[in-house]
Length: 382
Image 1 (cartoon, helix red, strand yellow):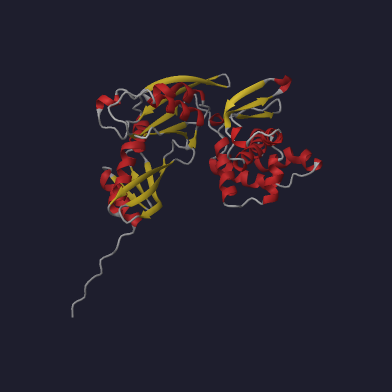
Image 2 (cartoon, rainbow, N blue to C red):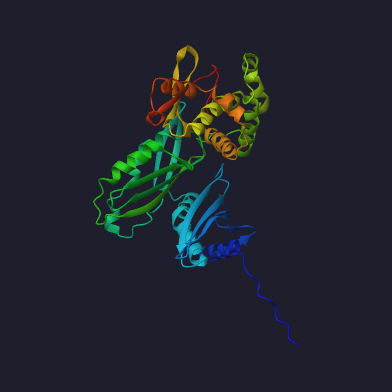
């Protein structure tokens, strides 16, 4: 009698790890990820969606990138199409390697394309730009006409605050029917203004084709000598946010409103972060509820003597950490309906929206709605 060992079937996750290891020299599989010892970098792939279409397999993968440079979640997505899952997985991996990973490795190695300076709160900030190659166009002659950084650079620089790393992802689609799609994401967040600028830029292209679909990645790293380390981690700010929602959700009386600052401070132990969490959550929740309104990218903060300071949302270290946690809880229905109503009544945006609707303005016609907040004298954004 002969005994045969049954061949072990690899999971999809194991196959993806194998493709990454094979494609990246000197890498090794470590748990749920692939570790690149030369760069001290870990890549953890996760399957987002598999579409088992009869004609082709379509896969969305997410790559969680971990390195000491990144003080917040750095997750990039890739889509692959193939006649089978293996082909689709391989295409996702290929897109990741020539796109974000190429720029990340250059950043860790210090191979920058440009150095520049900005100011934030009167302090000089030094930066290095790491620019990825254009994905989707192989014709070098056509690439000469495409200078994305020259279009987005100044506005991107204006949005830099004190974070150690900013990453920018550009997607452009131009189709034969005249449709144009342009998307700019800064640290994973869609930026309306820069996306619109790119859309206008596309109309000037002089390439030989009517159809384009391309991506480009940029990383901007702050010099260590100008970087001021932020006191709180992303996970800590998100935990504070979750707890603050419960406090704000019952702030339905004058007495509770008077106690609100102290109640949020008891959560954070920091006046600046307490102010940001207390002030941002109502405005963000209003934005999530009234999604058809176009909100401005800026926040005006009025301090003593009516002195107004303007900041882009990206310049606050905490802003999109708070937003991410709030949005996650909102979409997963972890915030009660009564809490939502109570919280958005605390926002300045709701008052503007409500007044506009009372005068007959359609909600989709409300554009560039800017947030104005009042801060205590000693407040310092970070």
